[in-house]
Length: 377
Image 1 (tube, rainbow, N blue to C red):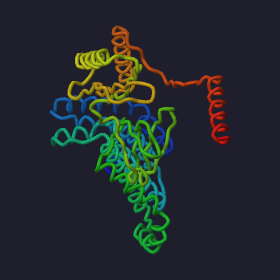
Image 2: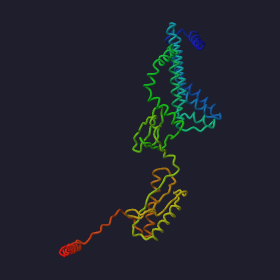
Image 3: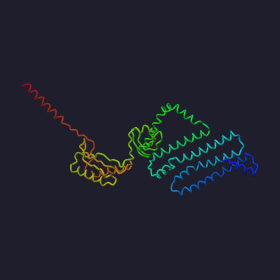
Image 4: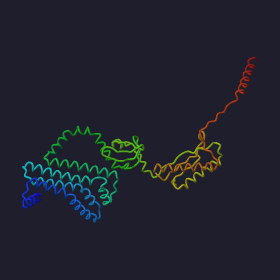
């Protein structure tokens, strides 16, 4: 770097006796004008090279460092523009520290871009080593990587400015007990997120149900799991709570259950009831959207106001709207069968038997006269 600065100084000294400010502004202007085309040319050349390789990892690395490299060219221009000026050793030392700190931050920026979930770097590495990685684990790794990059960047920049990081860590150790007590919930949520990542009771976009929430999983972070309810509200559930609750993952169903009782009138003849049960069973077995593995259609019981036909089967879908359409179609077909056989669907009813009031009175009088005669005798 010192050699480049000396060459620039010699060129300006040999060509024209310019003062320091003019030389500084010229250098800065040249970098401002040329940094975009130079960066574009360099990255186009690098992309041509990376596209010839068998993996996409190097392409993702180049894309992640494209914007940070442009900022680096501007930082280099500012640094060279300032360096051609005469400065005291103290100010020169500050400039060198600022340049190195900026360089560290630019590298961290590129690494942070590379660790994003949408960069695809984790998927590419997993496929290269033939490892199956869930989306939830990729998201967790991406956030953990960014956290590590940021923490290391702060530590290195602090050391560059001669800040005693070891003393800061020792200070944290002295107050470690108080910090641990204050951060119990945070640590519990962090370990809860790790349990979710390793155990994988659900994944992103899964429909889950717990005693506290039901909806679609949108994001899993260090602290909480974000669930979008069916009312379109966003619920943040702490990880420490959700791992303690029973979790029903409806998205992992292979099929959805259809189960209900179809009640018919008590006046339905036995022969008609047997025909309806048989035809409904045949209808379900012939239905293209009903799973054929397990189907039950039986005359199950005598209920209070109907003869109940028990229907049990599974629809070949897990989507709620599609399931409701199939269930509706089953209901329509069952109604058609009942109508064709002349069987009526029962409704809640109650029979009331009324006695003749006059007849009751005459009976009461006869009983009273009989009792009187017995007394006289």
